[in-house]
Length: 516
Image (tube, rainbow, N blue to C red):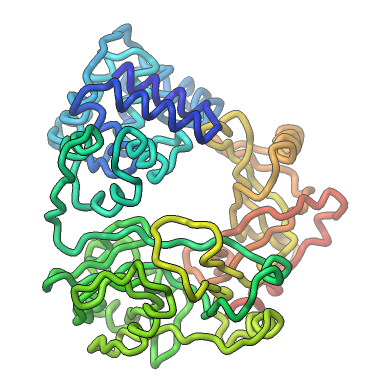
């Protein structure tokens, strides 16, 4: 556990990509099995352990530390796992093998879990306690993506990262066959049916950048406001994956039933009624559910809008140019009215496409996707072949109402801000944002919060309603969970309006008029 704790600490405080790769590669090359495999699974988000909830951890602390001391410490540190690791009263410093901690978290029953966690924390020093709690909560927060972790693995031997990603979702921790492969052994057999394949991602673009390309070499289509999915039928085994490889089929049995084709398709998951795409909020009501009621299936019918084929009738199409894959897609029979094909847009110049983007046929369209006709389907985010040109964000001027400390590197700053709009003579909270500002602006916002605090509610500070924030967001949905009746999509702070008085901020009625 000491080596794993040291790795997490070094990764968290090492910003450079190549330096992170060197750190992880050194750990994987010098750590024995099965610990290195479990560490790799934890860093990629593929280590499935019994969920350890914040309430369970708080309950353990209540038995050992004064409540007020814990509350003040948590407010200062800003991270639950780090607070517990520092406050835990114990003098142990054992080097517990990582696989022993994994076994404890995976095999211990619910009733015995609190005592088992407490006993483990007693055996560990502060830095190992933090590593164990990160493992237990599944919250690494070390600035390392799953793809970067697999790149480090690929650098250890012969396999390319694309080869590793191709079989990744058919493997299970601690990945001994995979490490044998990197050492020159045989390629692991990929026995899993209907495996997830790495998806191809796009990069943002604007009109000035597009003018450097020949529009004849590209095709374009609408960017639909759903979620990216991969739909597979492999010999009768049907799967629906999110873009990160999470199996979400349990929440969409109606879509699973509609997968009557033989192959793997790439597209957008949407809620549709009478042929019209519903707002994202309707789709969100079905996400992350383990089961769906008949009433929800009837009121929020889901479907697929496809824009690419990866595998079709036993043939791998990914190496073909997009134009050829698209021809197969357009001619395919999917055998269900829940599945259709995203139409291509007719344009001759980038100005033509700009005009289409400015006046989409539906309010739920997010922008346009632009793809090179000759591009193969490559996992990851290659530069150049695919672009996304999103619509301009909506913007309102809001007033900061509350602030909360951030986590990880931001734990010493107030960086999570709740903002509101005027409803009559009252400010009503309408959203929360925690990014969009520079490090220097973060320091300025933190100073404002500390000097303008008017009340405290645990880790949250109420601030004097003085500061106006220009908030940008991608869309709006009606929401019964919010006092304002509205939920924003992807809100972020685009500007700090030091020059504007709070009375000049926007009104709630103006925001409601933006609803689709």
